[in-house]
Structures are given as structure tokens and as C-alpha cells.
Length: 225
Length: 78
Image 1: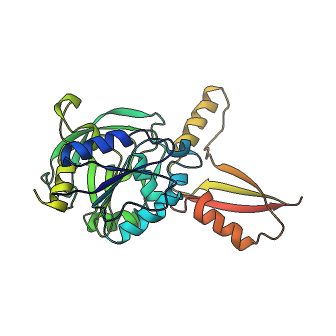
Image 2: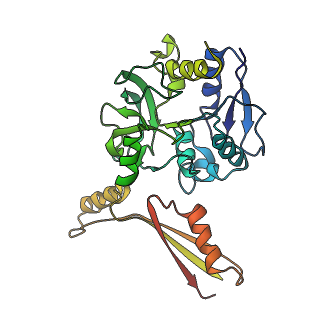
Image 3: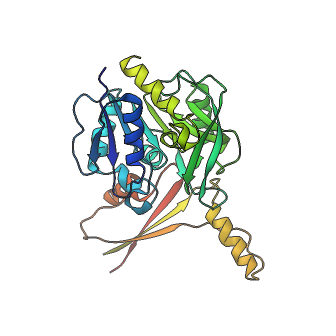
């Protein structure tokens, strides 16, 4: 089995190492590390991850500057070819700013930074990233964000729901996200953005393994068991 | 010349920061503040040759997020 994954690091990313470690521990393969200023991704990638953090100091809007960095042209192009892309936390913000996912992530409704484990419901277990969960499964994954308040207009939300593109929903009030949306899939299903951090729940020492299932699902789906 | 870009949240988009500012004003004893919406002012110094279309594109591509924000471009005479 060969699994070729890359983790992009932007200036201000701080979950890039955790993301790479999660991918390496689950796949057993070394992960490519890519810098925001790179113009190209490694060839023949199976998986691209945009990590959490505070890219470019959250200047202008969270993820806004990172979404316009050189490497993102290559990421958008790869996503268009169907390469799976996972964006977590700041990575989700970057994906919306880059136009790969609809909607926007605004300041938390309660103004405060929220950093704790939250309960999620798996809404769609037919995606590459979520096939190892069962539909409606209650899982626990930590969040750590200030701008996680998902917003999109009603027409967009209805379309997302109708197409089964809400991957995860908060099972409790966290940040004011419209319809409790915690994770969203692209139309083709190969791009997932989510505010909770699955890479922080991959082994018992971290308090649980509910996040590991996401990486196992994707890797199994891409390169076989 | 100087250009001011005013970025504001669209109507109907909840503004938690504006609400917090409103509560703070109330806490300071100011009465009668019915609503507060926080926006952003971006000042650009540009060549005279920069067109309105180019400024518009700057706003749509970067300065404003069209999902949640509106913008208004104001040319300030130099």
C-alpha cells in the first residue's frame, strides 16, 4: 500500500504537525510537508490536508490571505481533478475563502474563543471521509476556534442539506453556526471542511479515537484496507 | 489618489461583535443605542490610472467576502 498525502503549512499554521502525525500514524506512510509559497504540490497525491492555526495572523478575515497564497492555486486545481482535500479549523476557513466550499465562518456568536471537546452527530456516512462512522453516530472531537460560526444563505443551506453535504452537525450549542453545521462537503464530495479537530482524537492518550475513524475511512477508501 | 473601501456585513447577517459593542455602550450608561454593526475601513493609495473596475475586482476577490459582506468604494480627492 502506498499513500501519498501532503500537509500544507501557512505562516501561522499550528496544527500542521498534529495533522501530519495523524496521517502518518494511521497510514504508516511518511507525509509530504508543503509550504504556502510553493507553486506546486508533490506529484500523484492521494490526499491534501489544510491544517488548523492562525494563518497570516487572521489578517483581513480568517483564512483570507492563505486562500490567495501560491500553493492554493495548486490545491484548487487538484481538488478540481478530484483529489481529496481535508480542511480542519483554519483549513476550513481557507477552503471557504478559496471558494472550494460554500459559506463563510464568522466570529463565534458568543464572542468568546471556544476550546473544548464537543459532541457531534455524523450526518452523512457515505463520504470518503466518513464511511467508517454510522449515520447519526454521536462522536466527541475537540474544537478550538474564535471564528467557527458557519453562515450561508437559506438557498445554499437547503441545497447542502438536500444533497447530503452536511457531514457533521454539532449536537450541542457551540458557536452559533447556522443549523448547527460543523462540517461541509463539496458538491463532488472530495473536499471536506470542518471546525472540530479529528487529528486531536486519534489515540486513547488523547482522550478518544473518534477522529481516527475519519483518517481510517479516507485511507481505506483511497488505497484499500 | 486615496481610495476608501468600506466593508460592512450584509443585512440579515448576525454581527456578534456589533452586539457586544452595543452591550458595552449600554454598560457605560449610554441609552438609546438600538443596534451596532461593526465594519472595516480599508484605505488604499493608488495611481490615478487604477480604474473603478479594477477597484471593484479587488473588493470582490479579496477585500470583501461576498458571502457575508457588502462593500462601497469611495474615491477621496488627493
